[in-house]
Amino acid sequence: MTSVQDIRERTGDDPITMLTAYDTPTARLADEAGIDVLLVGDSMGNAVMGYDSTLPVTMDDVASRTGAVARGVEDALVVADMPFLSYGADEADAVENAGRLIRDAGADAVKLECGPHTVGLTERLVNLGIPVMAHVGLTPQRVNQLGLEQQGATAEAAAEIESLAEAHQTAGAFSVVLEHVPDDVAADITDALSMPTIGIGAGDATDGQVLVITDVLGLSEDVPPFAEQFGDVAAEMRSAMEAYRDAVEEGSFPRDD
Ligand code: KIV
Image 1: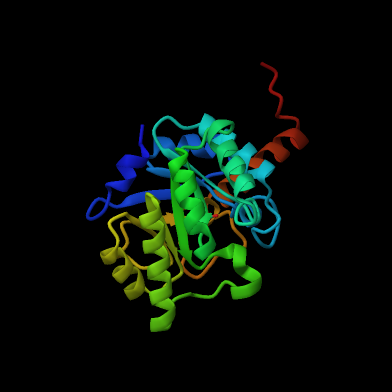
Image 2: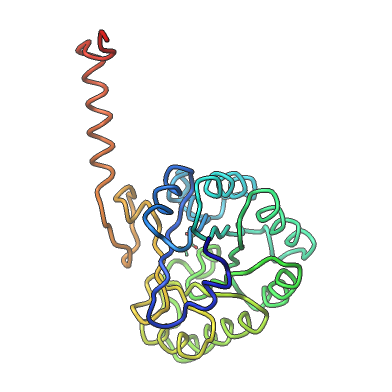
């Protein structure tokens, strides 16, 4: 069983593999494939729920899908994303929401899209026994303020991202996602931190990589510029569905036996 402590210690040459997952069969396959961390990301909004952003994703959505993922996993660490407005406004609500994902849904840790306002919350959650993965750089819950552009392009912006990551490390976070920042900024932040960095659109100097599962499998319609497709599951699904349709229409399914 991969633990938070295992991931915290994985800095350096043995890269952490992380994928998103939103359902039991996919989680089981990713676990069997040896993926270290499964993130029940609020990317589910775009990836599998038909929304055009992560903002409509609710606590009920994340809790239900975290349960589905946790039930499919034997080894991987399961991290549940705290959805938009489930944290950051009221600390007691945030603690209750994070606790629900751990206690009721079976997550091993939660992930927070970070700002200065999540430093204190990270410390509180960690003190209560809720491990926190931080997320800096492009934070899609701020799409209405920042769009989905690369972050940290100026020296000042890069320094802000680095100090935010450091503040969350000091507050007790066990790792940090660096999303869509320049490669050299990710490399500098990785050097500066003692906790591992997990990159998406952040180059190859981070301690691990994460991608959205539907992008990897070839099931997404819109993919970010930094995503990579490693298979064509859409073609397989289409062909199985067409074969089923043809068999029913021709009368060869159900078979006589
Ligand atoms: O929601 C998500 O899938 C994420 C990853 C892109 C890191 O936050």
